[in-house]
Image (tube, rainbow, N blue to C red; front, side, top):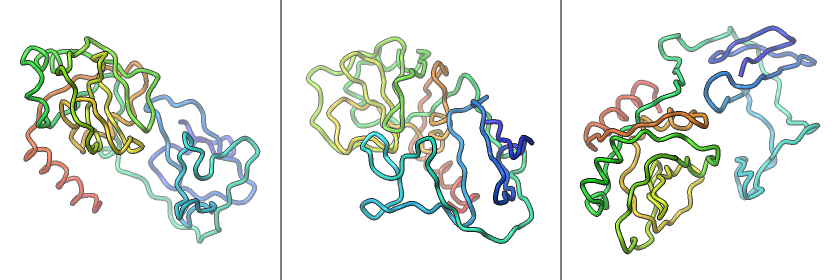
Length: 223
């Protein structure tokens, strides 16, 4: 989002010292959808239900408006650090998401499954932290629906209109739409930074391969 400190570009994926009275500004995002700002000591916010998280849809937590003040404690200055260039992700206009098929995948016809993996979908503007809505060739869901059950992070629901919905962190706890599968955890960051109109294609991946990739990611970054 082209961050500037007192009018000077500071770049992304790096730390910097900010002193009292300085002004930090952001411009519209050139790539991706979200930027994250953190302070060494953390921001000071009033807990709601024991958490300082914010869910704007439900009016929970600290939702900042123009003119609001968010406090942060002063901390000792440290040498600036940055993420090596080879680890800085790119946010292209077309991405591939790997899918671990669910036990409900067998309820879809072979033609509909083939269509799902061959179709180009696009992210719609009607997407948020609850879920990413896609638009493309509709997938005919199994007739009769399914019994409501718990929803996993990254689950791919196929509602009656056939347009997939990928559920994210603010998803509902239960759902009754058929779920073709779940997006591999290691691929979700790409999806969460996808802008409207980003082109998405799906490819199958085994649960063993997906688990290995996620384990390697967590081991490397000590998640």
